[in-house]
Length: 84
Image 1 (cartoon, rainbow, N blue to C red):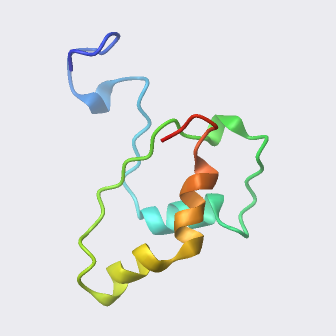
Image 2: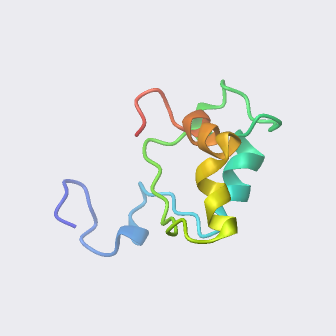
């Protein structure tokens, strides 16, 4: 990357990036959903940016991702105040 401060290597090697390779549905609902143990004071666990490699809504499971208000709200809960 040619961004200021980047290592010039892979974005996965950049110490500023926190990359998770896991089930996004479970991760966000467990941590930031309505019944999670997360608290708003725990700013270290809030994200500046959330990028998810989502599937096309062509089957029943994937359709649930897009229609789950708990899942969508968990993204908002996981972002810091200026997050995108």
